[in-house]
Length: 61
Length: 181
Image (cartoon, rainbow over all chains, first blue to last red; front, side, top):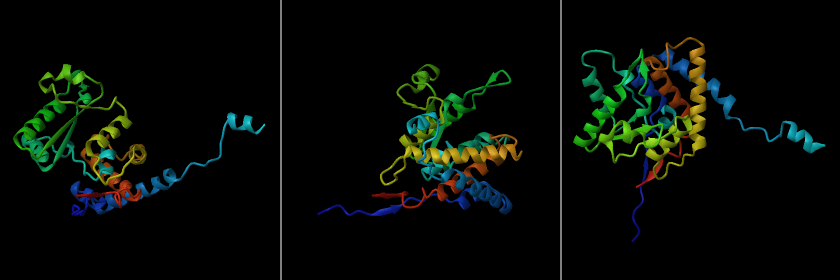
């Protein structure tokens, strides 16, 4: 008989939990969340496959 | 370290939370007892005003005592250089610290070695992603003059909260935080 497999959800602490723990006020939370929202789109995009630089220009020739 | 821990679903706490008071030592010990793990980077023993700061090794000693007395607490040591701990703290011979080489990637890899568990599929790229975004956040806040420094209770709290928000937005806390038992 196979061993019964159970899936246990590992409790990932949430933003709210961290903010509660560190006593962040409502405006502080908004401030942090807004700052994070501004950061993510800039760095989460995939890098273009287009090749730049002298090597690429040399190849084209 | 905050980025690495947050990505692994852990809520980082710090002695920065503990205000300087006569009761500080007791509060530090209480904070350690609340946590299952403690991490002590012994490469961070630096001089302040010409005097070496012994807080880190002292706290590592407290955590070592706690782990010996209470099996539940696990104390981990970090070092920048291999074999240095044998020379600086020979009482701990036989304890292997996690060597990070003084780099952020080394610290992230140390957190992977410490906290990777079955079902949590994180890569160094994931951790680097959290770290880079968190660093960007911290730099912006510093530039805005919001913080006195990184090592203040307010800055630490905001960094931890930002790390949790970044981990959630990157989707690392969804689907990957499952393990089989």
